[in-house]
Image (cartoon, rainbow over all chains, first blue to last red; front, side):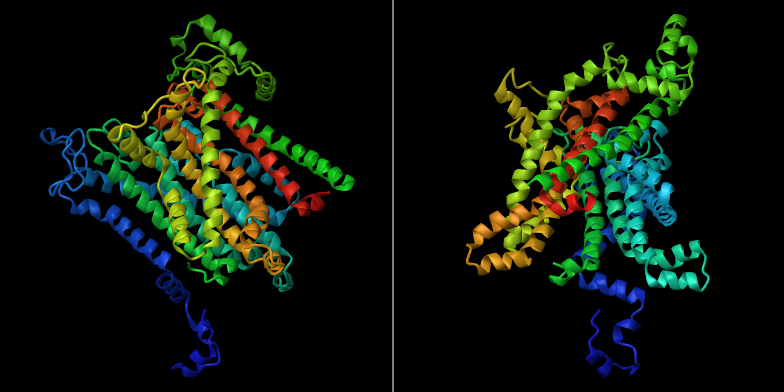
Length: 306
Length: 329
């Protein structure tokens, strides 16, 4: 972003274009994560959690479901970093197993909402008229439901499985994507470049997807990141209520549900899975907030990255 | 004065009309619930899992079949159901064997106490904190506020609730960890049971309010009118508390309104964790017991509540911000 003419003058390549134009998208994204403290901390946290989720289970010496009746409710120690549960199962192995479930559900749910919501908002607002009105009223009705309530009802209807959790969690976010895209399409539809595209004979769908939609990508990226965070939380709360994933599938919400009965005897059973959950949510929120502030000229003007 | 009032009335009516399609769609969704659950609707309404018709005596099955009007086309069934629901008749609870409306009404007070207390805590924490953080922009106060927001968003309420139970109920023994006492029975014990769940829920909402408010306050502080007020020689404190707070009230009202839905959603977890007998706990109990008439009634009540709150939020919003009134009138 530093379009300083001095850079061009002293730069190795004496080309006509200003320096910032030569930065590829990858360089700009990498630069953003290096410059913004929040984004960097979030990214490091996320990488650690992803590593824990997908590599971690292979590094621990215990199977998550391997009971050991002689070692029930062992406090955290060198052999069991997070202690053991009521059947003597190693909590660390179980938290790691829960991590991959959490990521699978959250990523699936957020992407599903994006894939349904964004095209829906784009197409209906581009068509306009009655289609748009009816869709808007349906979106209003979905928004009227508290997100968690809707997820609870849907998961009860569809039964507990990863795929039904995707739909149950994604459903309430669909209107948000549809609205972001709709606002942008209505705004861009009348612009000159769209007219120009019409004039050179581009089809309506081509204009929509190739010309207009790229403008909405940044706010959508923010929404997806923040949706990962809420999807992780919603999945955990559903499993905590016993409505989400049920044993033998290990999930953080399920671990916390178990821990509830043994709070006094074995508080570590509640502390560690909850901490893993909070750190995962935190990583997504830090990244999402940093990108949003970076895109919002109001916060950027004031020194932006806080 | 006459013209703005007229516009306000017009806006109110217009906005009230807009509520109708939303509420109707919601009732359709809640009605459809009973049709799309897998299995026989009569058996589901009676609380059975299996599709085994022989599990229920013939006469009871037939009576339920007629009560649900399953012999009629679905749109007709819906209209009858809607008519009954409008009169407060949601059928009989499978578990409690009494009219659903009685079960629901018995849980309303507890939920209202918890909701009000949480909202008060949320506002009492977030508004002064938000103003203070914005005024002391980029000092430790501001960083503390940012940290609080991140904490509130990242830490799930049910985990925070468990930690709070661990510390205040189990280790310190100051407050009871679960349960509820009606205020008319013993007010002190009522408060003691309310403090922990209301604080956990309230702080969660406070973080969300603060998140939006902080940016808005900062925005307001950089507006021309603040500079003008200061240049006129008004004391700094007066400018902040009178002018800035009044102007950012619009954002605050909106955020508080939006958080009603969050409060209701969050209360499902908190009421369950603290075994607090409110509506959300009733919903979860009804789900475990497959008590579908109760599920329908509670879901409908919650959603209609959100729609009504949003309606009032929009009215207050229009009242505070004349541009909206003028735009629609």
